Length: 94
Image 1 (cartoon, one colour):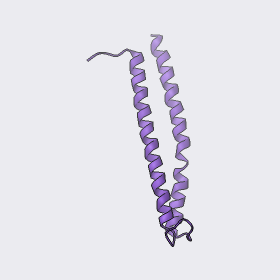
Image 2: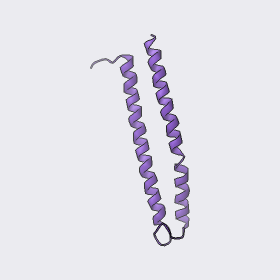
Image 3: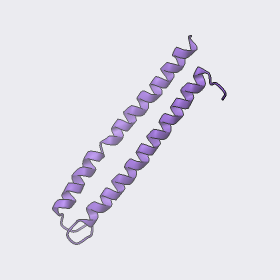
Image 4: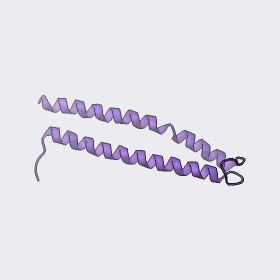
Protein backbone atom coordinates (compact mmCIF):
# COMPACT_ATOMS: atom_id res chain seq x y z
CA UNK A 1 0.00 0.00 0.00
CA UNK A 2 1.33 3.39 -0.95
CA UNK A 3 1.96 5.70 1.99
CA UNK A 4 0.42 9.12 1.79
CA UNK A 5 2.15 12.27 2.87
CA UNK A 6 0.53 14.55 5.43
CA UNK A 7 -1.13 16.68 2.75
CA UNK A 8 -2.77 13.61 1.20
CA UNK A 9 -4.00 12.43 4.57
CA UNK A 10 -5.53 15.82 5.31
CA UNK A 11 -7.31 15.93 1.96
CA UNK A 12 -8.51 12.35 2.35
CA UNK A 13 -9.94 13.15 5.79
CA UNK A 14 -11.60 16.24 4.37
CA UNK A 15 -13.20 14.20 1.59
CA UNK A 16 -14.58 11.74 4.14
CA UNK A 17 -16.01 14.59 6.21
CA UNK A 18 -17.64 16.18 3.15
CA UNK A 19 -19.28 12.89 2.20
CA UNK A 20 -20.55 12.43 5.77
CA UNK A 21 -22.04 15.93 5.83
CA UNK A 22 -23.63 15.40 2.42
CA UNK A 23 -25.25 12.20 3.68
CA UNK A 24 -26.54 13.94 6.78
CA UNK A 25 -27.97 16.86 4.80
CA UNK A 26 -29.68 14.60 2.25
CA UNK A 27 -31.16 12.45 5.02
CA UNK A 28 -32.39 15.56 6.84
CA UNK A 29 -34.03 16.90 3.68
CA UNK A 30 -35.83 13.60 3.09
CA UNK A 31 -37.01 13.42 6.72
CA UNK A 32 -38.33 16.98 6.62
CA UNK A 33 -40.16 16.31 3.35
CA UNK A 34 -41.76 13.12 4.70
CA UNK A 35 -42.80 14.88 7.91
CA UNK A 36 -44.36 17.71 5.91
CA UNK A 37 -46.36 15.24 3.86
CA UNK A 38 -47.38 13.45 7.06
CA UNK A 39 -48.55 16.72 8.57
CA UNK A 40 -50.75 17.40 5.55
CA UNK A 41 -52.11 13.84 5.64
CA UNK A 42 -53.11 14.12 9.32
CA UNK A 43 -55.44 17.07 8.90
CA UNK A 44 -59.10 16.24 9.42
CA UNK A 45 -60.04 15.91 5.74
CA UNK A 46 -56.63 14.79 4.44
CA UNK A 47 -55.81 17.98 2.56
CA UNK A 48 -53.50 20.81 3.44
CA UNK A 49 -56.49 23.15 3.89
CA UNK A 50 -58.32 20.95 6.42
CA UNK A 51 -58.57 21.70 10.11
CA UNK A 52 -55.57 20.58 12.09
CA UNK A 53 -55.61 17.67 14.49
CA UNK A 54 -53.37 16.89 17.48
CA UNK A 55 -51.12 14.70 15.38
CA UNK A 56 -50.88 17.39 12.71
CA UNK A 57 -49.88 19.94 15.35
CA UNK A 58 -47.31 17.53 16.84
CA UNK A 59 -45.81 16.87 13.42
CA UNK A 60 -45.65 20.59 12.79
CA UNK A 61 -43.75 21.16 16.02
CA UNK A 62 -41.30 18.37 15.07
CA UNK A 63 -40.72 20.05 11.72
CA UNK A 64 -40.05 23.37 13.46
CA UNK A 65 -37.50 21.77 15.79
CA UNK A 66 -35.76 19.84 13.01
CA UNK A 67 -35.61 22.97 10.86
CA UNK A 68 -32.99 24.43 13.23
CA UNK A 69 -30.49 21.66 12.39
CA UNK A 70 -29.21 23.19 9.10
CA UNK A 71 -27.67 26.11 11.01
CA UNK A 72 -25.61 23.63 13.04
CA UNK A 73 -24.56 21.75 9.92
CA UNK A 74 -23.18 25.00 8.50
CA UNK A 75 -21.19 25.64 11.67
CA UNK A 76 -19.81 22.09 11.58
CA UNK A 77 -18.72 22.51 7.96
CA UNK A 78 -16.81 25.67 8.85
CA UNK A 79 -15.11 23.92 11.79
CA UNK A 80 -14.07 20.94 9.63
CA UNK A 81 -12.61 23.16 6.91
CA UNK A 82 -10.79 25.31 9.47
CA UNK A 83 -9.30 22.26 11.15
CA UNK A 84 -8.20 20.88 7.77
CA UNK A 85 -6.46 24.14 6.90
CA UNK A 86 -4.80 24.37 10.31
CA UNK A 87 -3.63 20.74 10.17
CA UNK A 88 -2.21 21.32 6.68
CA UNK A 89 -0.10 24.23 7.92
CA UNK A 90 0.87 22.36 11.07
CA UNK A 91 2.14 19.33 9.15
CA UNK A 92 3.97 21.36 6.50
CA UNK A 93 6.05 23.15 9.15
CA UNK A 94 7.43 19.87 10.52
